[in-house]
Length: 111
Image 1 (spheres, rainbow, N blue to C red):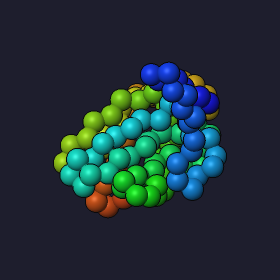
Image 2 (cartoon, one colour):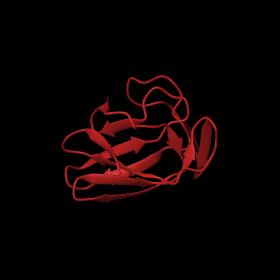
Image 3 (cartoon, rainbow, N blue to C red):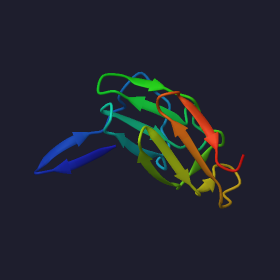
């Protein structure tokens, strides 16, 4: 994939050691408390929760269910995800799950 800016041609390339395709429907969540970025969501790819700490891309605890197009909010070391679509059946999801960044653990709000 290539992009042009200011007359220059730039070629996109994968970063990190992951060579499989990343879902275009993943959410990018910035964690300002420890200056890292989370890449969340899945659509058939291996990792549904990755953390980028400005040096490496590290797989974290996987989301309980693969989903795409969800809303999210980061607050006090917790990432809340709302709704979205099931990655396989493409039906809307009404639930909320949240991820504790300190514990590297997911929780379902309906439990």
